[in-house]
Amino acid sequence: MKIGIYGGSFNPVHFGHTGLAQWVATHCGLDEVWLMVSPANPLKSPDILADEQERVAGVRRAIAGMPRLRVCDIELHLPRPSYTADTLRALALRYPEHDFTLIIGEDNLTILTRWREWEYIVARYPILVYPRGRAEDKEVPPESLAALDTARRIPGARIRILEGAPLFHISSTEIRAKNNSKSAK
Figure (tube, rainbow, N blue to C red):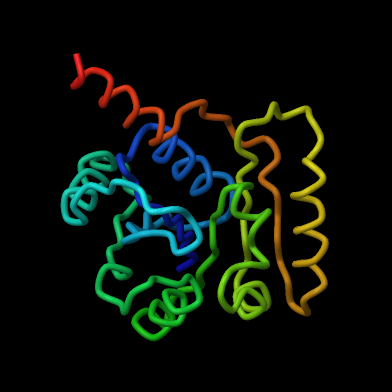
Protein backbone atom coordinates (compact mmCIF):
# COMPACT_ATOMS: atom_id res chain seq x y z
CA MET A 1 0.00 0.00 0.00
CA LYS A 2 1.03 3.59 -0.60
CA ILE A 3 0.73 5.51 2.64
CA GLY A 4 1.00 9.26 3.17
CA ILE A 5 2.48 10.32 6.51
CA TYR A 6 1.06 13.63 7.68
CA GLY A 7 2.69 14.54 10.97
CA GLY A 8 1.82 17.22 13.45
CA SER A 9 0.93 17.95 17.02
CA PHE A 10 -2.76 18.24 16.07
CA ASN A 11 -3.20 20.54 19.05
CA PRO A 12 -6.09 20.55 18.30
CA VAL A 13 -6.94 18.69 15.11
CA HIS A 14 -9.29 20.66 12.80
CA PHE A 15 -11.04 20.47 9.44
CA GLY A 16 -7.97 21.88 7.68
CA HIS A 17 -5.98 18.81 8.75
CA THR A 18 -8.67 16.32 7.82
CA GLY A 19 -9.66 18.15 4.63
CA LEU A 20 -6.08 18.22 3.37
CA ALA A 21 -5.53 14.56 4.32
CA GLN A 22 -8.65 13.53 2.39
CA TRP A 23 -7.65 15.64 -0.63
CA VAL A 24 -4.14 14.14 -0.69
CA ALA A 25 -5.49 10.58 -0.36
CA THR A 26 -7.84 11.22 -3.28
CA HIS A 27 -5.58 13.21 -5.62
CA CYS A 28 -2.03 11.97 -5.01
CA GLY A 29 -2.14 8.24 -5.68
CA LEU A 30 -2.13 7.18 -2.04
CA ASP A 31 -4.18 4.35 -0.57
CA GLU A 32 -4.31 5.93 2.88
CA VAL A 33 -3.06 8.95 4.80
CA TRP A 34 -1.91 8.39 8.36
CA LEU A 35 -2.16 11.40 10.67
CA MET A 36 0.97 11.03 12.78
CA VAL A 37 0.47 12.54 16.23
CA SER A 38 3.85 13.93 17.32
CA PRO A 39 4.93 14.56 20.90
CA ALA A 40 6.57 17.89 19.94
CA ASN A 41 8.50 19.44 17.06
CA PRO A 42 12.20 19.77 18.00
CA LEU A 43 12.60 22.78 15.66
CA LYS A 44 9.71 24.81 17.03
CA SER A 45 9.51 26.66 20.29
CA PRO A 46 7.76 24.70 23.03
CA ASP A 47 4.02 25.08 22.88
CA ILE A 48 1.35 24.31 25.40
CA LEU A 49 0.38 20.86 24.20
CA ALA A 50 -2.66 18.93 25.26
CA ASP A 51 -2.06 15.46 26.66
CA GLU A 52 -0.76 13.10 23.97
CA GLN A 53 -3.56 10.57 24.37
CA GLU A 54 -6.15 13.36 24.26
CA ARG A 55 -4.69 14.50 20.92
CA VAL A 56 -4.72 10.92 19.57
CA ALA A 57 -8.35 10.54 20.67
CA GLY A 58 -9.19 13.90 19.05
CA VAL A 59 -7.73 12.75 15.73
CA ARG A 60 -9.64 9.45 15.99
CA ARG A 61 -12.90 11.36 16.49
CA ALA A 62 -12.09 13.80 13.68
CA ILE A 63 -11.47 11.07 11.09
CA ALA A 64 -14.33 8.78 12.09
CA GLY A 65 -16.18 7.87 8.91
CA MET A 66 -13.20 8.78 6.68
CA PRO A 67 -12.09 5.33 5.49
CA ARG A 68 -8.79 6.36 3.88
CA LEU A 69 -7.54 8.21 6.95
CA ARG A 70 -5.89 6.59 9.96
CA VAL A 71 -4.33 7.85 13.18
CA CYS A 72 -0.78 6.76 13.95
CA ASP A 73 0.88 7.26 17.34
CA ILE A 74 4.21 5.52 16.70
CA GLU A 75 6.17 8.69 17.51
CA LEU A 76 4.74 8.67 21.02
CA HIS A 77 6.52 5.34 21.58
CA LEU A 78 9.92 6.32 20.13
CA PRO A 79 12.83 7.99 21.95
CA ARG A 80 12.54 11.74 22.35
CA PRO A 81 13.05 14.18 20.85
CA SER A 82 11.13 12.84 17.90
CA TYR A 83 12.90 13.10 14.54
CA THR A 84 11.20 12.37 11.21
CA ALA A 85 14.13 10.23 9.97
CA ASP A 86 13.79 7.96 13.02
CA THR A 87 10.03 7.77 12.59
CA LEU A 88 10.36 6.78 8.93
CA ARG A 89 12.88 4.07 9.85
CA ALA A 90 10.54 2.72 12.54
CA LEU A 91 7.61 2.71 10.11
CA ALA A 92 9.66 0.91 7.44
CA LEU A 93 10.66 -1.78 9.97
CA ARG A 94 7.13 -2.24 11.29
CA TYR A 95 5.39 -2.05 7.92
CA PRO A 96 7.86 -3.26 5.26
CA GLU A 97 4.97 -3.95 2.86
CA HIS A 98 4.07 -0.24 2.65
CA ASP A 99 5.61 2.58 0.63
CA PHE A 100 5.64 5.82 2.60
CA THR A 101 5.32 9.38 1.33
CA LEU A 102 5.90 12.36 3.60
CA ILE A 103 3.35 15.20 3.59
CA ILE A 104 4.64 18.54 4.88
CA GLY A 105 3.53 22.14 4.90
CA GLU A 106 5.41 24.75 2.91
CA ASP A 107 6.62 26.25 6.19
CA ASN A 108 8.50 22.99 6.82
CA LEU A 109 9.95 23.02 3.32
CA THR A 110 11.71 26.30 4.10
CA ILE A 111 13.47 24.68 7.10
CA LEU A 112 13.88 21.18 5.65
CA THR A 113 17.67 21.49 5.46
CA ARG A 114 17.68 22.07 9.25
CA TRP A 115 15.96 18.73 9.90
CA ARG A 116 18.08 15.97 11.38
CA GLU A 117 19.21 13.64 8.55
CA TRP A 118 17.26 15.62 5.97
CA GLU A 119 19.36 14.22 3.13
CA TYR A 120 18.37 10.67 4.15
CA ILE A 121 14.68 11.64 4.11
CA VAL A 122 14.84 13.43 0.76
CA ALA A 123 16.81 10.62 -0.91
CA ARG A 124 14.49 7.83 0.23
CA TYR A 125 10.95 9.18 0.53
CA PRO A 126 8.70 11.12 -1.81
CA ILE A 127 7.64 14.43 -0.26
CA LEU A 128 4.37 16.24 -0.97
CA VAL A 129 4.39 19.92 0.02
CA TYR A 130 1.18 21.72 0.94
CA PRO A 131 1.35 25.42 -0.10
CA ARG A 132 -0.08 26.95 3.07
CA GLY A 133 -1.38 30.46 3.32
CA ARG A 134 -1.10 31.66 -0.27
CA ALA A 135 -3.55 31.89 -3.09
CA GLU A 136 -3.24 29.12 -5.66
CA ASP A 137 -2.33 31.53 -8.43
CA LYS A 138 0.61 33.19 -6.62
CA GLU A 139 4.19 32.12 -7.11
CA VAL A 140 6.03 29.96 -4.62
CA PRO A 141 7.89 32.26 -2.17
CA PRO A 142 11.65 32.64 -2.80
CA GLU A 143 12.66 30.99 0.50
CA SER A 144 10.59 27.91 -0.42
CA LEU A 145 12.11 27.83 -3.90
CA ALA A 146 15.61 28.00 -2.44
CA ALA A 147 14.90 25.12 -0.06
CA LEU A 148 13.25 23.16 -2.86
CA ASP A 149 16.24 23.71 -5.15
CA THR A 150 18.67 22.56 -2.43
CA ALA A 151 16.61 19.47 -1.59
CA ARG A 152 16.16 18.49 -5.24
CA ARG A 153 19.95 18.30 -5.64
CA ILE A 154 19.96 15.15 -3.50
CA PRO A 155 20.06 12.05 -5.74
CA GLY A 156 16.69 10.31 -5.67
CA ALA A 157 14.79 13.39 -4.47
CA ARG A 158 11.08 13.33 -5.32
CA ILE A 159 9.49 16.54 -4.05
CA ARG A 160 6.22 17.90 -5.35
CA ILE A 161 4.36 21.10 -4.47
CA LEU A 162 0.65 20.29 -4.29
CA GLU A 163 -0.61 22.83 -6.80
CA GLY A 164 -4.38 22.88 -6.86
CA ALA A 165 -4.74 21.70 -3.27
CA PRO A 166 -7.55 23.46 -1.43
CA LEU A 167 -6.43 26.15 0.98
CA PHE A 168 -7.74 25.94 4.52
CA HIS A 169 -7.51 29.24 6.35
CA ILE A 170 -7.41 27.86 9.86
CA SER A 171 -4.68 26.87 12.27
CA SER A 172 -4.43 25.14 15.61
CA THR A 173 -2.71 28.27 16.96
CA GLU A 174 -5.78 30.38 16.06
CA ILE A 175 -8.13 27.84 17.65
CA ARG A 176 -6.10 27.77 20.88
CA ALA A 177 -6.02 31.59 20.97
CA LYS A 178 -9.80 31.78 20.54
CA ASN A 179 -10.32 29.13 23.22
CA ASN A 180 -7.97 30.98 25.58
CA SER A 181 -9.79 34.30 25.05
CA LYS A 182 -13.15 32.62 25.69
CA SER A 183 -11.92 31.01 28.91
CA ALA A 184 -10.44 34.34 30.07
CA LYS A 185 -13.87 36.02 29.89
